[in-house]
Length: 453
Image (cartoon, rainbow, N blue to C red; front, side, top):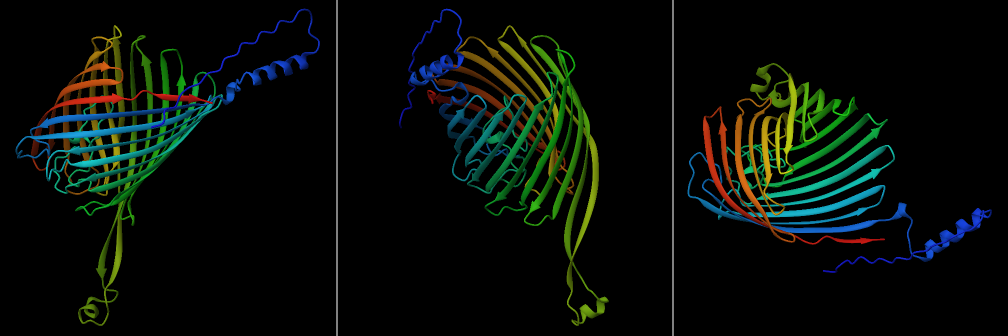
């Protein structure tokens, strides 16, 4: 691998002028010429290239890796992950291209054997009072077994939440087979003054299943939102947000869902190290579904006698629904070594089952640093989900509790060891499953390579 090196050339020029200067233009031209000879690029055009890479491996022991109500023998799994990212930054623009891949192996025929790959591109353009962002992402997930547990987790973890095969969000009862997702996003923010800011965001994604799975359908999802933020005091910020989302199955929109949300929120800084926020609103959704049935265009006797052939007619129905939309968070820090965060919210996400998945989630994280090289973190997550508009659909619940110790062994090398307890249940079918995990993770971050021009 070629190594990028950073070269610097410094030249100090000192010009002393005595007496009044009348020829201002010649002096300015001379100074500009000296700067050009010194090889100093204009600051507005300075660009910084960076290259980051990392490798991570994880060893894990799990007494119920498939989250089955009747667990079998304990299994040991190993994973290998790699990340490669490059970025270009200027005073007004930044572009980042990153790619990562993860391979999990639990055992022959296990539903947790998979290979995931992701490629992302993001660009930011900063102006004096505005910022524009756009990006795209492509993701390929391949599970080597179609045998999946009905109690597979349905809520993807967030920062600080457990990770691993048991916590990677998947469609309940569907598995992933060979799932491919492609998404585009854009956003614009504008600061009218020091206290008032407006934001516009939009994103679209399409998910396809490359291998046939029972009940799995391709789908497309579009989200758009507009928000306004007002900082009334140094401690208080008020915001309002209006959102719209559209979900449809592919290639024919046999199932659709349109949702509108409106929320009002506030953020209050309790002190220099703690803050709280709350957001309340409402959502309204309209779900549509269609079904093809065979009917006779004339009285039924004509079709029974074979004189007239029946025709297919598409029947379409709609259903309206509304409810509460909420989000609340609290964060605090003590002595620069301990951090606590509490979060509760209601989310909705598209699903391969053909309907939207709505989830209520509670997340708690705690971090403590013993020193600059060692620390402890723990988290607890509870999620309750429902498939809106799907008759007889399961209502899964997920609980995950984990604790881990991390230590930095050297430059770029870190070790992490932890325990994780997972409980997944389904209220309609009265099913429950538990698993206990012990894992060790070793991560190596390569030295950042950079170059300026």
